[in-house]
Length: 223
Image (cartoon, rainbow, N blue to C red; front, top):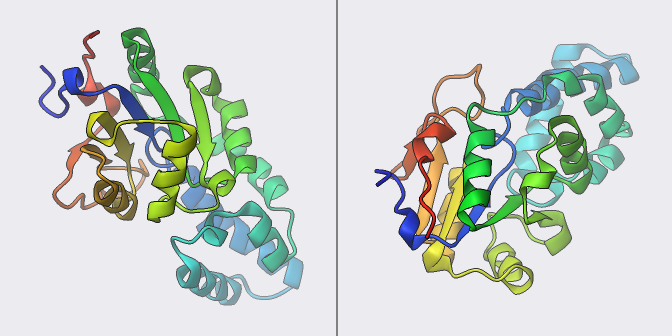
């Protein structure tokens, strides 16, 4: 039996995308380095000054649906966000053992759902680059539900369109606020990710069970 997850008690697997399945280095580099640099160029202003201003804006809206929205930032900054993401799309990378894990879940007959705060345009870019879309029974962006995963409304609306029993559902996510929200909703099996960004130190994962990589959630036994 897997020490982190009792697969006999799980019917549905909900997976986050950025930092969980995919290396968060792409997103961190984009929002913290590439976008501020290109925005400074567009304004013909010093990079350091503009980066400080953007970082302040990021902190103001963290965890809200707008904060995750490509369209919101495009309007706010007057930049083609997806074009800028395409410029560094070569950095999009799958975390180790993710493919093995997804394959095992599908072979076990459990329902496999991607549940992400990423805007649909970002989801499309990353699925195109990684080829992961075919692995999932459903791909749900919080923007389609009108609520971020940090909100209870997300889980309620997700359950309306993608029914799951919280007591028999596993969620793997790198965001502790999201895990807290899922726990409040009643999702029983919760696993955090220690190193969402492979180029950064391990994150504190509070009291949640946590993985270094997806090999630690294997094997999966068919029911």
